[in-house]
Length: 202
Ligand SMILES: Nc1ncnc2c1ncn2[C@@H]1O[C@H](COP(=O)(O)OP(=O)(O)OP(=O)(O)O)[C@@H](O)[C@H]1O
Ligand SMILES: [Mg+2]
Image (cartoon, rainbow, N blue to C red):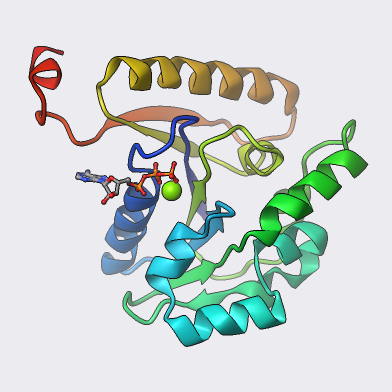
């Protein structure tokens, strides 16, 4: 099983779109794929699940928040994506912000192993794709401990390029503290290029 995280501390650069496209690419090639929505905005959750399922998710609270609190419940929080064959999702809701604050406070000095523990219960998936909100949250810290590849989508405006530096710097400093994490590769993906004169010059 390979885990790819989509991360950039800048907002609106195409993280969620990249996560969906990557997952769709994997699943169309026959790989059983799990998307983890790590963004409390739930963009991917709302795009990939129908309204009735999203209501069900809200009611039962079987989301990524539950996985962080009870890693052994990960399989109960997986929903099939009807529009994409072979694709499943662990959804997210605004509750994730609250859960992260609580757990972060309780585990400031401990190893960020909530997803590591949860992944031990996952069976049969070929690919995992993790979407994130645009900040280096406690969830991202946990995701770093299970990620083989991080894709940093960016457009090529000045502020976005600075965002890449911050993201890679923060990622590198976290990785230096995670002694039993997989070796992580970091790749930059330029999105939406060629739309402005500045883009063309860069
Ligand atoms: N490759 C692309 N080409 C054209 N438009 C794109 C591309 N990728 C994303 N977009 C558009 O850019 C907007 C932001 O994309 P998206 O929601 O994926 O960004 P994000 O980084 O996940 O944002 P956030 O930081 O708020 O989570 C959306 O309207 C999306 O349709
Ligand atoms: Mg997003």
